[in-house]
Image (cartoon, rainbow, N blue to C red; front, top):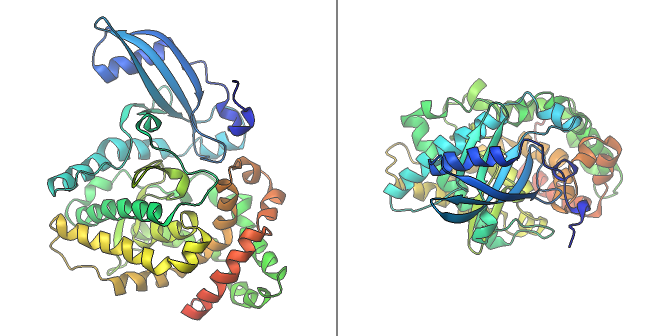
Length: 413
C-alpha cells in the first residue's frame, strides 16, 4: 500500500541523490571496520511523521548487504540538513546544531552512561550513533529504535508514568553534569550554543508577535481579560528576559544557582517509549544552563493540561528527588542541592515560564496534534489562530490563576 504523503513532511518525501549505494557502503565499512562490505539493495522512506520535528530532515533506510559470505540487513535512521530552498534551509543553514549533536552522541552522553554504570545504574540515554560527518555534508546515522519496539507518542498525551520516566532520565543525566561542571567543566566547552543562538531565531515572526497575540487572546475571553494588566508592562522585554535566562551560565552566572547540561528541546516528540523505559532524541540545542530550564520546558512541552493542573508538584518532586539521589549515588561531595532552593530558582526564573506559556505552548499544541511546524513558522495568520483554540484558552484559565496565587505577577517589569 502506498503511504499517504500527507502524513509526512514534504522535504522528506524524496531522498537526496547522494543517499546512494556508495554512501551506504561507506557507512557500513565504517561501522564494521571492514572494506569488504557490498551493498545489495536499499530502500529509503521518511523516518518521522509530520509534526515530529523541524530542525532537520530524516529518512529511514533498510539496507541489505553482504559481508564475509553472509547476507545482512540493517535499518538506519539518517539525519541531515534541509536541501530544499526555503525558510527551513535559511533558518538552519548557518547553525551549529550538528556539531553540538555529534558531541552529545559521541562524547558527552557515553561519558554520562559510563559514570552511572560505575555507580551501578546500567542506563542508556539514546540510540547508538554509528556514523557522523560534517563534510561534504552534515549527516548523522543511528540504529533504528523502532526495531527495538520504541515508539513516539502521537495524537495523545503522555501518561503520568511516561512523564515520570522521561523526567527521571533527564534528572540522572543532569545530576552527572552537575557534578562534572564542578570537576571537569571543560568537557562541555563545545556546547556554546542554544535555541536562542540559531541564526535569526529571535527575529522570527512567531516570536516577535507571539506575546502581542497572547494579549489579544486574553481580551477575547471575559474571565481572562483581567490578567492583561499584569503582562502589559513586560510585552516589549519578554523575549530579552527569556533569552537572558537561557544564556545565564555563559553571560551572567549566578553564584548560588544550580547549573546542568540542558537538553534544550525537551518535549514529548523528542523521546521514544517502550513500556516503562524511554530513549531521548534530538540533542541539537543542548547547552549548559539553569537546572530550571528543561524542567519548565517540560511543564509546557511534555506535561498535558491535566498534569499541569493536578500533578505539577508531584512531578517536580519526582524530578528533584531523582536528581538528588543520583548525585549521592555517583559520589558528589559538594553542598547538597535542596528542594526549597530548587523551587525558589524556578520562581526566580518566572519570565521563562511566562514566555513558554505565552509563546511556545499554543504552537506546541499544534505540533502535538500532528501538524507540520512549517504551517505556522511561515504563516503568522495561521499562528494567530492557535491562540484562540479552545484547548489553549482552557489551559490559560488554570495557569493564570495559579501564577497569580503564587505571586508571579508581583513586580513584573
